[in-house]
Length: 411
Image 1: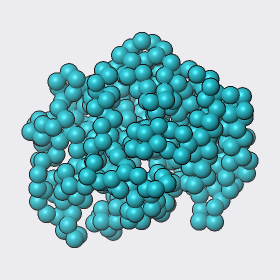
Image 2: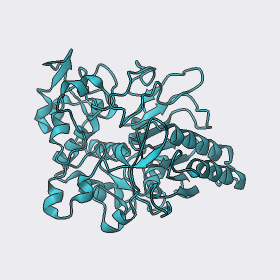
Image 3: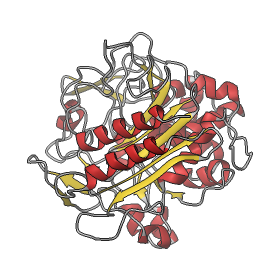
Protein backbone atom coordinates (compact mmCIF):
# COMPACT_ATOMS: atom_id res chain seq x y z
CA UNK A 1 0.00 0.00 0.00
CA UNK A 2 2.37 2.72 -1.20
CA UNK A 3 1.65 6.43 -1.24
CA UNK A 4 1.92 8.53 -4.36
CA UNK A 5 5.08 10.41 -5.28
CA UNK A 6 3.13 13.66 -4.94
CA UNK A 7 2.06 12.73 -1.40
CA UNK A 8 5.64 11.92 -0.43
CA UNK A 9 6.74 15.28 -1.77
CA UNK A 10 3.95 17.02 0.14
CA UNK A 11 5.11 15.41 3.40
CA UNK A 12 8.67 16.50 2.76
CA UNK A 13 7.63 20.06 1.91
CA UNK A 14 5.56 20.36 5.09
CA UNK A 15 8.35 19.11 7.33
CA UNK A 16 11.12 21.03 5.56
CA UNK A 17 9.01 24.14 5.88
CA UNK A 18 8.76 23.90 9.67
CA UNK A 19 12.52 23.35 10.05
CA UNK A 20 13.60 26.03 7.57
CA UNK A 21 14.09 28.56 10.37
CA UNK A 22 15.26 26.61 13.45
CA UNK A 23 15.08 29.69 15.67
CA UNK A 24 11.33 30.18 15.23
CA UNK A 25 10.17 26.89 13.72
CA UNK A 26 11.37 23.49 14.91
CA UNK A 27 15.10 22.66 14.75
CA UNK A 28 14.49 19.12 13.53
CA UNK A 29 11.83 16.44 13.10
CA UNK A 30 11.58 12.82 12.06
CA UNK A 31 8.39 11.48 10.48
CA UNK A 32 7.66 7.84 9.71
CA UNK A 33 4.43 6.21 8.50
CA UNK A 34 4.00 2.44 8.12
CA UNK A 35 1.40 -0.04 6.95
CA UNK A 36 0.33 -3.30 8.60
CA UNK A 37 3.10 -5.22 6.82
CA UNK A 38 5.63 -3.11 8.69
CA UNK A 39 6.83 -1.44 5.51
CA UNK A 40 7.38 2.29 5.58
CA UNK A 41 4.97 4.34 3.52
CA UNK A 42 7.35 7.26 3.98
CA UNK A 43 10.36 8.16 6.07
CA UNK A 44 11.54 11.74 6.19
CA UNK A 45 14.04 13.54 8.38
CA UNK A 46 14.35 17.31 8.36
CA UNK A 47 16.52 19.88 10.07
CA UNK A 48 19.23 19.25 12.64
CA UNK A 49 19.58 17.38 15.92
CA UNK A 50 19.80 20.70 17.73
CA UNK A 51 19.42 24.40 17.10
CA UNK A 52 23.10 24.97 17.76
CA UNK A 53 24.47 22.13 15.64
CA UNK A 54 24.73 21.40 11.94
CA UNK A 55 24.44 17.64 12.50
CA UNK A 56 21.37 16.55 10.52
CA UNK A 57 18.39 14.66 11.81
CA UNK A 58 18.56 11.10 10.52
CA UNK A 59 16.62 7.89 10.98
CA UNK A 60 19.27 6.97 13.56
CA UNK A 61 18.52 10.02 15.71
CA UNK A 62 17.44 9.03 19.23
CA UNK A 63 14.62 10.82 21.05
CA UNK A 64 13.41 10.82 24.61
CA UNK A 65 9.95 9.53 23.79
CA UNK A 66 8.56 10.37 27.25
CA UNK A 67 4.87 9.41 27.49
CA UNK A 68 5.05 7.34 24.32
CA UNK A 69 6.53 4.84 26.81
CA UNK A 70 3.03 4.37 28.22
CA UNK A 71 1.99 2.23 25.25
CA UNK A 72 4.79 -0.24 25.98
CA UNK A 73 3.76 -0.43 29.63
CA UNK A 74 0.17 -1.09 28.61
CA UNK A 75 1.31 -3.89 26.29
CA UNK A 76 3.30 -5.41 29.16
CA UNK A 77 0.28 -5.21 31.46
CA UNK A 78 -2.00 -6.83 28.92
CA UNK A 79 0.49 -9.64 28.34
CA UNK A 80 0.30 -10.39 32.05
CA UNK A 81 -3.50 -10.16 31.95
CA UNK A 82 -3.48 -12.79 29.20
CA UNK A 83 -1.35 -15.00 31.46
CA UNK A 84 -3.68 -14.53 34.43
CA UNK A 85 -0.98 -12.81 36.49
CA UNK A 86 -2.78 -9.48 36.41
CA UNK A 87 -6.49 -8.70 36.00
CA UNK A 88 -8.13 -5.54 34.76
CA UNK A 89 -10.81 -5.33 37.43
CA UNK A 90 -9.37 -7.07 40.52
CA UNK A 91 -8.68 -4.28 43.02
CA UNK A 92 -7.69 -6.71 45.76
CA UNK A 93 -4.99 -8.16 43.53
CA UNK A 94 -3.69 -4.66 42.80
CA UNK A 95 -3.51 -3.86 46.53
CA UNK A 96 -1.79 -7.16 47.23
CA UNK A 97 0.88 -6.38 44.65
CA UNK A 98 1.15 -2.68 45.55
CA UNK A 99 -0.15 -2.26 49.13
CA UNK A 100 0.91 1.40 49.00
CA UNK A 101 -2.20 2.07 46.90
CA UNK A 102 -4.58 0.91 49.63
CA UNK A 103 -4.14 3.92 51.90
CA UNK A 104 -3.59 6.62 49.27
CA UNK A 105 -4.95 10.03 50.21
CA UNK A 106 -6.78 12.49 47.96
CA UNK A 107 -6.20 16.23 47.74
CA UNK A 108 -9.45 18.04 48.53
CA UNK A 109 -9.38 21.83 48.86
CA UNK A 110 -5.69 21.76 49.73
CA UNK A 111 -6.04 19.06 52.39
CA UNK A 112 -5.66 15.29 52.31
CA UNK A 113 -8.77 13.19 52.75
CA UNK A 114 -9.39 9.45 52.73
CA UNK A 115 -9.64 7.57 49.46
CA UNK A 116 -13.11 6.23 48.71
CA UNK A 117 -13.17 3.17 46.51
CA UNK A 118 -10.44 0.91 45.20
CA UNK A 119 -7.98 1.21 42.35
CA UNK A 120 -7.94 -1.34 39.52
CA UNK A 121 -5.49 -1.93 36.69
CA UNK A 122 -8.19 -0.83 34.26
CA UNK A 123 -8.37 2.52 36.06
CA UNK A 124 -4.60 2.92 35.91
CA UNK A 125 -4.51 2.27 32.16
CA UNK A 126 -7.59 4.43 31.57
CA UNK A 127 -6.28 7.32 33.70
CA UNK A 128 -9.31 7.17 35.97
CA UNK A 129 -7.48 5.97 39.10
CA UNK A 130 -7.17 9.52 40.40
CA UNK A 131 -3.51 10.40 39.84
CA UNK A 132 -2.37 13.61 38.16
CA UNK A 133 0.76 15.41 37.00
CA UNK A 134 1.93 18.54 38.81
CA UNK A 135 2.63 20.25 35.48
CA UNK A 136 -0.99 19.76 34.38
CA UNK A 137 -2.90 20.06 37.68
CA UNK A 138 -2.59 23.22 39.78
CA UNK A 139 -4.01 21.43 42.82
CA UNK A 140 -1.08 19.06 42.84
CA UNK A 141 1.42 21.79 41.98
CA UNK A 142 0.24 24.06 44.79
CA UNK A 143 -0.09 21.30 47.38
CA UNK A 144 3.66 20.62 47.33
CA UNK A 145 4.89 24.20 47.43
CA UNK A 146 7.21 25.81 48.41
CA UNK A 147 9.28 22.75 47.41
CA UNK A 148 7.15 21.35 44.60
CA UNK A 149 7.04 18.03 42.80
CA UNK A 150 9.35 16.84 40.02
CA UNK A 151 8.07 13.74 38.21
CA UNK A 152 11.39 13.22 36.45
CA UNK A 153 13.70 12.75 39.45
CA UNK A 154 15.97 9.71 39.35
CA UNK A 155 14.72 7.41 42.08
CA UNK A 156 10.98 7.79 41.48
CA UNK A 157 10.20 8.11 45.19
CA UNK A 158 8.68 11.54 44.75
CA UNK A 159 6.58 10.43 41.80
CA UNK A 160 5.22 7.42 43.69
CA UNK A 161 4.55 9.44 46.86
CA UNK A 162 2.25 11.95 45.15
CA UNK A 163 -1.33 11.86 46.46
CA UNK A 164 -4.41 11.43 44.31
CA UNK A 165 -6.22 14.46 42.93
CA UNK A 166 -9.52 12.66 42.27
CA UNK A 167 -11.39 9.84 43.91
CA UNK A 168 -10.73 6.53 42.06
CA UNK A 169 -13.06 5.79 39.19
CA UNK A 170 -14.75 9.17 39.10
CA UNK A 171 -13.11 11.12 36.29
CA UNK A 172 -10.42 10.90 33.60
CA UNK A 173 -7.24 12.80 34.40
CA UNK A 174 -3.84 12.33 32.85
CA UNK A 175 -1.15 11.54 35.39
CA UNK A 176 1.20 9.02 36.95
CA UNK A 177 -1.31 6.17 36.70
CA UNK A 178 0.77 4.18 34.22
CA UNK A 179 3.93 4.55 36.29
CA UNK A 180 2.01 2.59 38.92
CA UNK A 181 0.99 0.07 36.25
CA UNK A 182 4.71 -0.36 35.51
CA UNK A 183 5.33 -1.05 39.20
CA UNK A 184 2.75 -3.87 39.01
CA UNK A 185 4.55 -5.34 35.99
CA UNK A 186 7.87 -5.34 37.84
CA UNK A 187 6.52 -6.95 40.99
CA UNK A 188 4.54 -9.64 39.18
CA UNK A 189 7.24 -10.52 36.65
CA UNK A 190 10.25 -10.21 38.94
CA UNK A 191 11.99 -8.13 36.26
CA UNK A 192 12.85 -4.46 36.14
CA UNK A 193 10.52 -2.81 33.67
CA UNK A 194 13.19 -2.07 31.06
CA UNK A 195 14.31 -5.70 31.18
CA UNK A 196 10.72 -6.85 30.81
CA UNK A 197 10.26 -4.62 27.76
CA UNK A 198 13.37 -6.06 26.17
CA UNK A 199 12.58 -9.71 26.85
CA UNK A 200 8.90 -9.80 26.03
CA UNK A 201 8.28 -6.92 23.61
CA UNK A 202 11.37 -5.44 21.98
CA UNK A 203 13.53 -8.50 21.33
CA UNK A 204 10.59 -10.47 19.86
CA UNK A 205 10.01 -7.54 17.52
CA UNK A 206 13.70 -7.34 16.61
CA UNK A 207 14.12 -3.84 18.07
CA UNK A 208 17.48 -2.82 19.54
CA UNK A 209 17.19 0.94 19.91
CA UNK A 210 14.33 1.41 22.38
CA UNK A 211 15.76 1.54 25.89
CA UNK A 212 15.45 3.26 29.26
CA UNK A 213 19.24 3.41 29.41
CA UNK A 214 20.55 4.44 26.00
CA UNK A 215 23.78 2.77 24.90
CA UNK A 216 26.87 4.78 24.12
CA UNK A 217 25.95 4.55 20.44
CA UNK A 218 22.40 5.78 21.11
CA UNK A 219 23.61 8.69 23.21
CA UNK A 220 25.92 9.73 20.40
CA UNK A 221 22.80 10.15 18.24
CA UNK A 222 20.67 11.87 20.90
CA UNK A 223 18.57 14.84 19.81
CA UNK A 224 18.84 17.98 21.94
CA UNK A 225 15.80 19.21 23.88
CA UNK A 226 14.66 22.79 23.18
CA UNK A 227 12.55 25.42 24.91
CA UNK A 228 10.20 27.71 23.02
CA UNK A 229 9.96 31.17 24.59
CA UNK A 230 6.82 33.28 24.71
CA UNK A 231 8.05 35.27 21.70
CA UNK A 232 8.16 32.06 19.66
CA UNK A 233 11.93 31.65 19.50
CA UNK A 234 13.56 28.31 20.27
CA UNK A 235 16.78 27.67 22.18
CA UNK A 236 18.56 24.54 23.33
CA UNK A 237 18.04 23.65 26.99
CA UNK A 238 19.27 21.09 29.51
CA UNK A 239 17.65 17.69 29.25
CA UNK A 240 14.69 17.39 31.65
CA UNK A 241 15.23 13.63 32.11
CA UNK A 242 18.91 13.39 32.91
CA UNK A 243 19.33 10.45 35.27
CA UNK A 244 19.18 7.60 32.72
CA UNK A 245 21.62 9.50 30.51
CA UNK A 246 24.20 10.09 33.24
CA UNK A 247 24.00 6.67 34.92
CA UNK A 248 27.06 4.81 33.62
CA UNK A 249 27.60 1.91 36.04
CA UNK A 250 25.26 -0.88 37.10
CA UNK A 251 25.22 0.60 40.59
CA UNK A 252 24.15 4.00 39.25
CA UNK A 253 21.50 2.47 37.03
CA UNK A 254 20.12 0.46 39.94
CA UNK A 255 19.16 3.74 41.61
CA UNK A 256 17.14 4.97 38.62
CA UNK A 257 13.38 4.38 38.65
CA UNK A 258 12.10 2.54 35.59
CA UNK A 259 9.32 4.90 34.59
CA UNK A 260 6.51 3.14 32.78
CA UNK A 261 5.03 6.56 32.13
CA UNK A 262 7.98 8.36 30.57
CA UNK A 263 11.22 6.38 30.73
CA UNK A 264 12.17 5.30 27.21
CA UNK A 265 14.48 6.66 24.53
CA UNK A 266 14.01 5.42 20.97
CA UNK A 267 14.49 5.76 17.26
CA UNK A 268 11.06 6.58 15.77
CA UNK A 269 11.57 4.12 12.94
CA UNK A 270 11.80 1.31 15.50
CA UNK A 271 8.89 2.59 17.61
CA UNK A 272 6.78 2.44 14.47
CA UNK A 273 7.36 -1.32 14.33
CA UNK A 274 5.51 -1.54 17.66
CA UNK A 275 2.68 0.39 16.01
CA UNK A 276 2.76 -1.92 12.98
CA UNK A 277 2.38 -4.89 15.33
CA UNK A 278 -0.78 -3.33 16.76
CA UNK A 279 -2.06 -2.80 13.20
CA UNK A 280 -1.42 -6.51 12.64
CA UNK A 281 -3.53 -7.63 15.65
CA UNK A 282 -0.59 -8.20 17.99
CA UNK A 283 1.74 -10.14 15.71
CA UNK A 284 4.89 -8.57 14.28
CA UNK A 285 4.61 -8.41 10.49
CA UNK A 286 8.40 -8.55 10.22
CA UNK A 287 9.47 -11.21 12.75
CA UNK A 288 6.22 -13.13 13.14
CA UNK A 289 6.41 -12.87 16.93
CA UNK A 290 3.05 -12.66 18.68
CA UNK A 291 3.12 -10.28 21.63
CA UNK A 292 -0.64 -9.95 22.17
CA UNK A 293 -3.76 -11.77 20.97
CA UNK A 294 -6.27 -10.12 18.62
CA UNK A 295 -8.92 -10.20 21.34
CA UNK A 296 -6.61 -8.31 23.69
CA UNK A 297 -5.93 -5.68 21.03
CA UNK A 298 -9.71 -5.32 20.63
CA UNK A 299 -10.08 -4.85 24.40
CA UNK A 300 -7.41 -2.15 24.42
CA UNK A 301 -9.37 -0.30 21.72
CA UNK A 302 -12.62 -0.24 23.72
CA UNK A 303 -13.66 3.19 24.97
CA UNK A 304 -13.21 3.13 28.74
CA UNK A 305 -14.99 6.43 29.45
CA UNK A 306 -18.19 6.56 27.36
CA UNK A 307 -19.74 8.68 30.11
CA UNK A 308 -17.15 11.43 29.50
CA UNK A 309 -17.47 12.22 25.76
CA UNK A 310 -15.87 15.66 26.20
CA UNK A 311 -13.08 14.65 28.58
CA UNK A 312 -10.37 16.42 26.54
CA UNK A 313 -12.23 19.68 25.94
CA UNK A 314 -12.26 22.85 27.99
CA UNK A 315 -9.91 21.70 30.69
CA UNK A 316 -8.09 23.99 33.12
CA UNK A 317 -4.90 25.77 32.00
CA UNK A 318 -1.61 23.92 32.31
CA UNK A 319 0.00 24.31 35.74
CA UNK A 320 3.63 24.78 34.66
CA UNK A 321 4.01 26.92 31.55
CA UNK A 322 7.61 25.84 30.94
CA UNK A 323 6.44 22.24 30.46
CA UNK A 324 3.05 22.51 28.80
CA UNK A 325 0.92 24.97 26.91
CA UNK A 326 -2.72 25.29 27.89
CA UNK A 327 -4.72 23.14 25.50
CA UNK A 328 -8.45 23.88 25.30
CA UNK A 329 -8.84 20.69 23.25
CA UNK A 330 -6.46 17.77 22.74
CA UNK A 331 -7.66 16.85 19.25
CA UNK A 332 -10.03 19.39 17.65
CA UNK A 333 -12.70 17.91 15.39
CA UNK A 334 -15.46 19.67 13.50
CA UNK A 335 -18.82 19.31 15.20
CA UNK A 336 -17.23 18.23 18.49
CA UNK A 337 -17.99 14.50 18.18
CA UNK A 338 -17.62 12.26 21.26
CA UNK A 339 -14.07 11.57 22.42
CA UNK A 340 -12.83 8.31 23.91
CA UNK A 341 -9.94 6.73 25.77
CA UNK A 342 -8.75 3.15 25.36
CA UNK A 343 -6.32 1.26 27.56
CA UNK A 344 -3.53 3.90 27.58
CA UNK A 345 -4.41 6.06 24.54
CA UNK A 346 -6.84 8.60 23.10
CA UNK A 347 -9.47 7.33 20.66
CA UNK A 348 -10.82 9.64 17.97
CA UNK A 349 -14.30 8.09 18.00
CA UNK A 350 -15.33 9.85 14.77
CA UNK A 351 -13.19 9.93 11.61
CA UNK A 352 -10.60 12.71 11.60
CA UNK A 353 -10.11 15.54 9.14
CA UNK A 354 -6.72 14.14 8.10
CA UNK A 355 -8.38 11.02 6.69
CA UNK A 356 -7.95 8.75 9.68
CA UNK A 357 -10.74 6.30 10.45
CA UNK A 358 -13.07 6.24 13.41
CA UNK A 359 -11.54 4.71 16.55
CA UNK A 360 -8.01 5.62 15.57
CA UNK A 361 -5.67 5.53 18.58
CA UNK A 362 -3.09 8.22 19.23
CA UNK A 363 -1.00 9.67 21.98
CA UNK A 364 2.06 11.80 22.61
CA UNK A 365 5.19 12.64 24.57
CA UNK A 366 5.74 15.88 26.47
CA UNK A 367 8.59 16.98 24.18
CA UNK A 368 6.10 17.02 21.28
CA UNK A 369 6.15 13.56 19.81
CA UNK A 370 2.88 12.17 18.44
CA UNK A 371 1.93 8.68 17.21
CA UNK A 372 -1.26 7.24 15.72
CA UNK A 373 -2.59 3.77 14.85
CA UNK A 374 -5.50 3.45 12.39
CA UNK A 375 -6.46 -0.22 12.44
CA UNK A 376 -9.29 0.17 9.92
CA UNK A 377 -7.13 1.64 7.15
CA UNK A 378 -3.95 -0.13 8.22
CA UNK A 379 -1.87 3.00 8.68
CA UNK A 380 0.25 4.13 11.63
CA UNK A 381 2.96 6.67 12.15
CA UNK A 382 4.93 9.04 14.33
CA UNK A 383 6.29 12.55 14.25
CA UNK A 384 9.15 13.18 16.66
CA UNK A 385 10.64 16.41 17.92
CA UNK A 386 12.29 17.56 21.14
CA UNK A 387 10.64 20.86 21.98
CA UNK A 388 9.06 22.14 25.21
CA UNK A 389 6.45 23.12 26.24
CA UNK A 390 4.03 20.39 25.19
CA UNK A 391 1.38 21.34 22.68
CA UNK A 392 3.75 23.14 20.31
CA UNK A 393 1.58 24.36 17.44
CA UNK A 394 4.42 24.27 14.93
CA UNK A 395 4.87 20.53 15.54
CA UNK A 396 1.15 19.80 15.76
CA UNK A 397 0.38 21.58 12.49
CA UNK A 398 3.22 19.67 10.81
CA UNK A 399 1.88 16.39 12.18
CA UNK A 400 -1.65 17.06 10.96
CA UNK A 401 -0.38 18.19 7.57
CA UNK A 402 1.97 15.23 7.09
CA UNK A 403 -0.64 12.74 8.27
CA UNK A 404 -3.22 14.18 5.86
CA UNK A 405 -0.73 14.03 3.01
CA UNK A 406 -0.20 10.32 3.73
CA UNK A 407 -3.92 9.55 3.65
CA UNK A 408 -4.49 11.69 0.57
CA UNK A 409 -1.76 9.78 -1.21
CA UNK A 410 -2.72 6.19 -0.36
CA UNK A 411 -2.87 4.08 -3.49
